[in-house]
Length: 309
Length: 225
Image 1 (cartoon, rainbow over the protein chains, first blue to last red):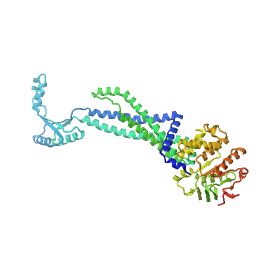
Image 2: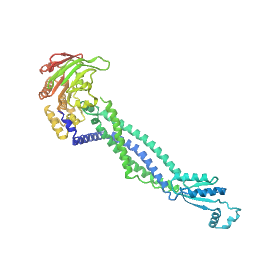
Image 3: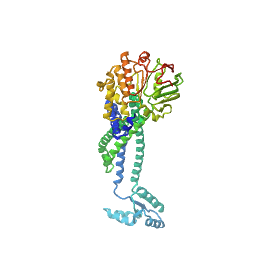
Image 4: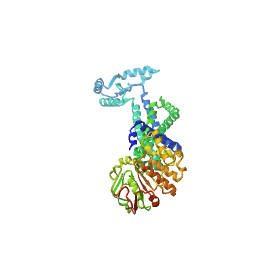
């Protein structure tokens, strides 16, 4: 005499039970719309902040990618001995990290400088050539770390030479970007944990309101799984709502900060356009909302149902 | 169907709510538990329904050893019994139909079958015409009948009732007990707690008398243990 056992196993009955749980959860939410909207808004704000920071960081990264010339390393060989120069030349010939290099003789440099002047006679006042010999090195790769390593190797080979590379600001920007990502990860994790606790609390209080129904259902043989099912659907609904709200906030935020950011970039002579997040990123935001909503509901219902009579 | 062997239940360090109770109710039987309030009637029913665990002793109900039943197995066991409370314990946030349908929802019945069974149960207690109303608008007697419909809608093998006539006048009380008798006639084992000895005696069924947590047998319930 266990007709339910047989019916339980059928897929349509299972689907119907889930549909009922989802419908009941939606009804409960519609009966208390203000509370539901507050949960959605809280989740939306919490998701929107790290998403906004991420969009800014992602766009800042493209700033360094926009640099269209290859990095260069220049060695100013002022007062460097001839033997060292020979060592340096051997190094430049053998190091695979070097694409090509050019020797710029001090006299040639002065001559070409003289050509550029309106009055070439000006330089006749100089007793001797103030320019050093220069080696202009083009690295084989633009990778900042390889360039930095090459720069250090060259400086070691030619002690006394002044070594300058023009990718310093790219490296600074990259390290700032890494720092930003790290801060974003910490902020995002803390906010996510906060959201999880808020959603768990909301689920627990909702279950407290349902306690008579839960007690009666328990007596009738309801399992944990059955009792928490509406809460999990509720969590998914809050999560979806929060994700959509966060996406809207994000788009508004980017829209509002676009013009001032581009003006600020222009003031620094930088070409910088704030790109809108793509569909993948918005989808990721929705998924993050759904995941947080579900996890929060699971956390809250697990706790509340364990304590229920 | 029900067999208790030297069952004792103590709540905390208080005195024993039940002491050394042994009883047996055979499948298909109907029996009453009487006694003054505080005698342990509710505790006894709660133990048999698996809502409490005994401090000592063995309880066997419908083939399950309740003192050894795992937490995981309890929901499955409870689905085989129906429980009626003195205060009905209806849910006022939903209509009569949904109240009665709750056990079937838990058993994952499909809609058409669910509708059929809920209607049949409501028809049996004479409330088919009230399926759409909120139970809050019903009289105490009607609310109790909704509670009974909910307890039998999934056709349990065992029906337990704790003071089902507690708030009702004598005529309504007789009606309710007659309902239990009807269910018993179609094979449902029934154990009903009531303090109204006069009413119970008129039913001509075995009666177990509880006094201070001890059985003082008056007549065999099926047979004494």
